[in-house]
Image (cartoon, rainbow, N blue to C red):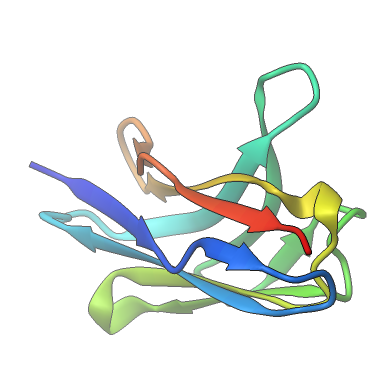
Length: 116
């Protein structure tokens, strides 16, 4: 059974940094895309960063230049380095893994709160 577990969330002051981790277990298929999501204003999850097998990355405009997505294929893990955090970054952050074949895998999320 595949499990994705996020960690690293918490409370941080505006301008601060956090590093989120998403570690997978039970994966037997190669992952073609890893991604981080957070909830959008309409309640749906919106993608904020993704990384492919060739290490190509994409970012939502709202986090570009502040967040960095990294992966460790040997560990089946993906990370999100967040800096310059703003109150509007407060959210629940979830990771997703897309295998070459079959449905995506999701974690349950880790909360991030940016506040004084």
